[in-house]
Amino acid sequence: MAEWESSYGGMRLHNARILTAEEINERYPLEVDSRMARLTREFAERGYDILYGENPNLMSADVLFGKPYDWTADIIMTAAYLYKTTPEQIVLGCYTDMSETKAIYAAVRLRNSSDILMI
Image (cartoon, rainbow, N blue to C red; front, top):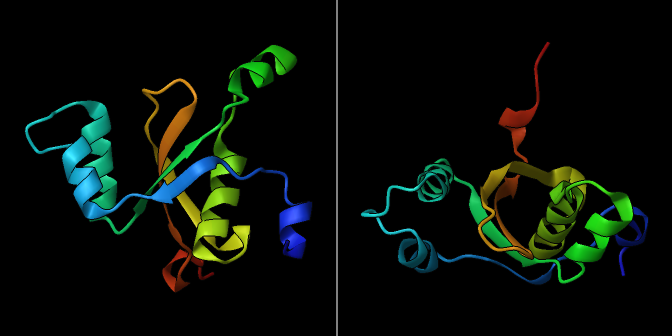
C-alpha cells in the first residue's frame, strides 16, 4: 500500500472501474435525454473519464452520521488508485449518475497544467 493510501481520508470504492466509450454509449444512448445522460455525455466530450464505484456500507454511514453520504473523498481516492497516482492529481468534474442506491458514476480526469492558476 502506498503511503498516501493509508493517510488519505477516503476509501476505495468496490467494483470500481473507468467506463469504456462503448459502456457509456450503451448506458446513455443519444436517444435518452435525461439529465444523467446529458451530464455524462457532456463530461466525456470535455475529456473526462466516467468512474463507476460502489459503497456497500452506505446505509450504515447515513445512520452513523445522520446526514447524506458525501462520495467525494472516496471517488478521488478510487480514481487515484485506478490511475496509479496520488489524490492531488485527480480532478472531479461532477457526479453524473446517482440513480443507484449504493453506487455512483462520476466524471474524473488527471490534473494537467491548464488547471494551475497563473497570477
